[in-house]
Image (cartoon, rainbow, N blue to C red):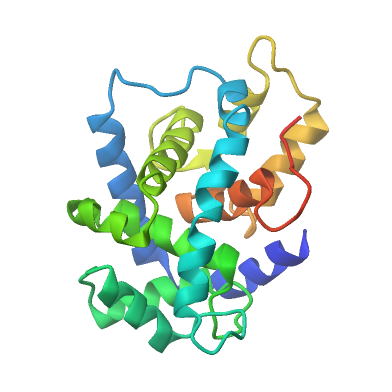
Amino acid sequence: MSKIGSMFFCCSSSNKYKRLDEKLGRKMLEVKRNLAGHDNFKSLNGIILRFPQFKEGLQDIRGVFEQYDEDSNGSIDPEELKKCLQQLQMHMTEEEVKDLFHSCDIDGSAGIQFNEFIVLLCLIYLLKDQHLPNISKLGSPRLAATFDTIIQAFIFLDKNGDGKLNKKEMVKALNAPCERSPARITQTRFREMDWNNSGKVNFREFLFGFINWVGIDTDDDLSLT
């Protein structure tokens, strides 16, 4: 298990965020129904080819992150996050904000770092789609499109449509015609997402794995092949 996976396991093993993850799962199913017949991806290679665009779009968030990291310590604390959400006019309850904060603070540092901030904003985007116009307040018109495409990538991999990924689905995606991967690669990629070894990967777990693959936190682009 990777270092980041170990940290995620520590903060999620108690299933503390089951309610949040179930809500995200229901929202994902709703999006899937709305997208029926309008699939953005036909193959895993189609997702991989978008990695440069994903990385470019998500890097747009860095300016927002630095804006709200008022003390410039490299992380956003709960009060700084509240100011960010207020500016975005994201109307959430204290409990919702708290659950999102702690579920994305995977190292338990009491601060949201850049990668965690990307995940947090994407979760808000999925949960609060009735406020989509406010995403433009982030200063990047392509950010909404980036989040939409990431959500569609998850839906493509979710072959049985239950709002979670399992190893069988990953094997099916990675071993489709013309994109076969060695079994060890498939298992490694799934383990990178299934940090609590539950055999299932929810959207929150997928996001942390996905931004690692895209290469947001490194100078080297990572790929699935």
